[in-house]
Length: 374
Image 1 (cartoon, rainbow, N blue to C red):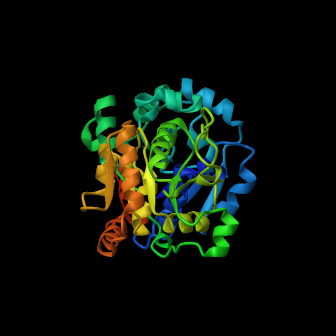
Image 2: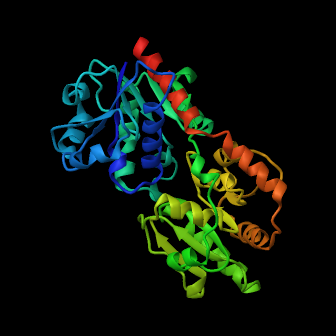
């Protein structure tokens, strides 16, 4: 069985979707239970094809569409031509890993829909993401199976697009084993990374959906009563949206690290007092789960998906009503003053350990086999 995945998300900074595609490819390439599987990774851009081979695991071939991405996207938005398998070679399954499934041609189709933010909070996403309003339903029509990272998103997709429940398969994201081995940075690493002695961490693109203005407002409120509260460390690429207003917060209390490689990211999270996740909407929420893998407390918006992913272990996470500044400030203050609890930290680690990329890969492979046999 030959499967061709859209590997275009590998070419940019490794945010959530790029990490998903990378981990999925590595797992499938090493899956002992799939000796018949042949993987190809395709990029829908001429410029990125030269770099693709360096980004793929052993055993995965790289292919590229021999046409500019914009021309292909315009054509695929209006018709079923040119078929993807005609551009990248014969295959049994085409997997659109990032919301969009090109016309698969004679192959079967699978598409991953990571969330419905383009419908639920369109003012907080890019123009490219807003285009998913038209592209996602077309992709769903092309697909034999739709994959989602959580049951919460699966339920939304079934309701929004009136799909039979059995056409949507949940493939939860995983936490790499290196997270469980992460250790706080030593003094030299803290100096290199510009870290204070104590900090809260926020991980992800600096974008409107993450509710960072609300967090800064809540943090000002905490600072006013406790000047010694841990600093805020924001890790991630610039993203988009209005610039964050840090007026009234001492410069040493807010640190922007930019995008950091995995080793630095893991160390920053492992050394934090708590991970803060005040997002207004999410499809899964990998940063809180990765914090759990380090034993680190989490303050998160009370969303169906955060409840689903983080579970109900007493004391493991503080859930805050979305958009409630006072409740967020109270949770941040409590997290900053809390005494570390080793048994609860171990419970967090055990919970995160159940989320592996092997589980993701196995569920995805089952979906491939299902559509290939239909």
